[in-house]
Image 1 (tube, rainbow, N blue to C red):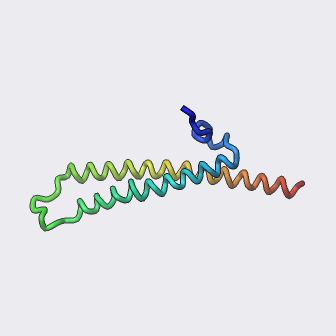
Image 2 (cartoon, rainbow, N blue to C red):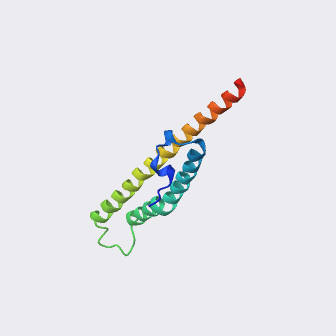
Image 3 (cartoon, rainbow, N blue to C red):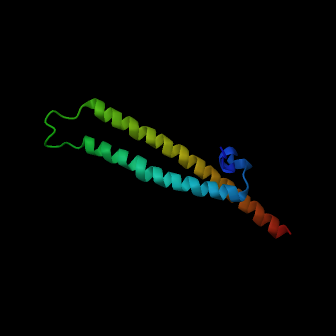
Length: 106
């Protein structure tokens, strides 16, 4: 299998171009996760917690606990994705700063 270079290298080892591409990919992944993963889980939890007239017996605690676990797992993944993206953006800023400094001193 031909693995893209960016997935086999750590962010620190990538060229500026690779860092930019990886940041763009991570940004798209983060947005997609929030729209298709995290938000629907939170909306489902809110729906479960709202009392409905048809819920005479109430909602079982296990259903709410399960949905909370799903939301928390999704939130952890969001945090990991965001931290990786933020780290990549910091590295990009450092690379750009280094390039600008070297241009000014030349």
